[in-house]
Length: 326
Image (cartoon, rainbow, N blue to C red):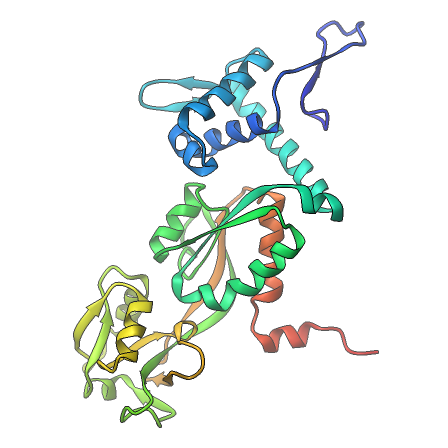
């Protein structure tokens, strides 16, 4: 399918007429959402439409093309053979159009749409404000929807197409997920400024066992990383209070209830807490961008990804990448 996305040549090759077809880009977008998510209900949620509205748009597209694109049953929705062929052409049309408009300054201010980004809460403050701000300057009418959830939920949101891309520290072993590393985020001890450990530069895990310890709960991705690394240790801290999310742990430490181990990116600004390096062992997690393997991002999402790579790298790396002054 060419740039003339809403027209088709007449079947009679000797006839030079071009029949205008009664569908638009919104219908193509609905079709692609159903094809990607395998469900009219899921597609409706991703497009913020009613299920009946999505169904009407797909029906309109099928009527305009004169073919069935889906086989519908009470339990499932599957692409027909023609639908499987058409989905690639439809995605090419949408990507080509979005890319063309995003590349033109005036049009970029007029094009509307949405980019959905899933990000672990502990990394939101570090990665996203500058990126979202710059993206909004470049593409004022494209909305950014942020899913700030646990690492497992982020992986699921990207895998099922709810999010265009994700920022997390798991997914490197998933066959259907592409992981693009951004930076290493070490775990540190968080404690109040007046705590006995606050003036230390480094502490061991054995030392933490002497103090009131607030822990992340089982099932947390960060807790899983810590448990894996600390399994062989003979002496490790025992928690007296357990929470599910890193921001809640930081809040309890700020309130003076004890100490905790958190990713450095989760430390609050303005030095409200002391941050102490850990050793024996020292641990870190790799933060990266995840997306579905083998599927190109839509141009708007690709633009957001490039801004992430440009603006979310450590300051030292950004300075090193700048060309030398002439």
